[in-house]
Image 1 (tube, rainbow, N blue to C red):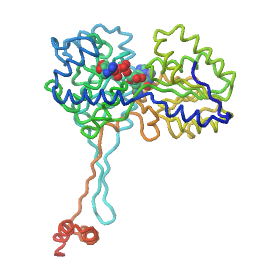
Image 2: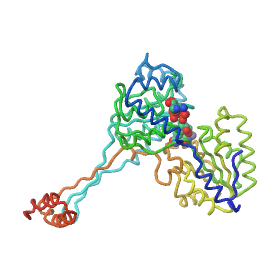
Image 3: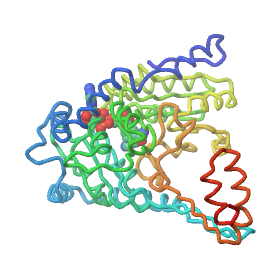
Image 4: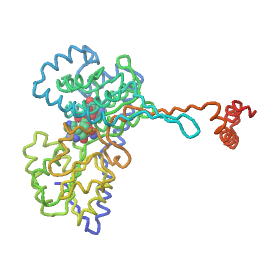
Length: 431
Ligand SMILES: NC(=O)c1ccc[n+]([C@@H]2O[C@H](COP(=O)([O-])OP(=O)(O)OC[C@H]3O[C@@H](n4cnc5c(N)ncnc54)[C@H](O)[C@@H]3O)[C@@H](O)[C@H]2O)c1
Ligand SMILES: N[C@H](CO)Cc1c[nH]c[nH+]1
Ligand SMILES: [Zn+2]
């Protein structure tokens, strides 16, 4: 049973704040473990990677080495069923065309004084993508990370992925091949993030690390940020469904469980203005939990972090949704399209009864790597923009330096920075 809250109850605010502050992600314990792993990889390089892979993924990677060879990739890809390959290609193409539209354009112009200004976009040259692989394999996440990177023009695209018990997932490798990944390593967790950031004999360091992962991966990304760029903290999955009485509880139940089955630390929340729908959906969740292969994970997530919130109206409902700032927000009420503009904080919005979040996970075209743990209040999902950076370009000639330079000299002297002042003044024969 998930917790049940009613926005009309007198103690609601306290209970809601407790829900918001539930710690599902990085605990002090996780952070301490991750700090030690990173230090160890920094010191012992590949040896540490082999040891952690033996410990957490239960196999010895030494005989084959950390890099997955082209032969292994080709052999795995050959095993993929043509129908499955066609689905991957459809997903790849849809992701590609959506992300191509996000590519920013260079801008150069001459202002009224004749000064030339511009913004120039260049790709991050070397990027590491983390593809989760502990509890489930994610070929779709390979595409979501790698396709925008290649659209942006990343030259060296490196993928790390845990291969539990040493078993390669053919689809993960097929997706990497389809998306144009350049190097793939069989290593996961905090140790993989450390290797991408600091480099080892086998894995040259990258400039930026992107991609989702469990609490260990999220903590490691936080720790290496600064040495390398990161995209965001995309941790255990979340969904918030806002639904009125005109919904099939069975549909809502599977939508809630679709995120819960990712991780025991995932969170699924239903906000509704209809108590009967709340009861029926909870009952439907219990039914579906008897059938799901990942019922143990989904059930634990629902029991520990799931919530059903009754609201008097959508004004209150939307205010709560914006405070929750979920990774995914499903709007399943009459007039859902009109509600979109009222959303301030959500990683991605899924509008209407026929847009289950799961379609966005695979083939919608938009990205499924999204901010979790309320970070949608200040960050966005992965996009082409994560793989480019902007450099400004400025060009003055003697004439326009004469126009704007004296003000720079004045300001530099006010800041007590005489070399700055002289650097402009000498060019203007001002001393
Ligand atoms: N936000 C998104 O876009 C998105 C997309 C896909 C998946 N996800 C999330 O990614 C996560 C995937 O998690 P996962 O576990 O399946 O795969 P994972 O690859 O993130 O983690 C597996 C690795 O974690 C490390 N690990 C496990 N237990 C450890 C321990 N006790 N100490 C140190 N390290 C340990 C191991 O190195 C292991 O290889 C889930 O939470 C899922 O919800 C998010
Ligand atoms: N829903 C996940 C993001 O939270 C992404 C995913 C991958 N495969 C299935 N789902
Ligand atoms: Zn999913």
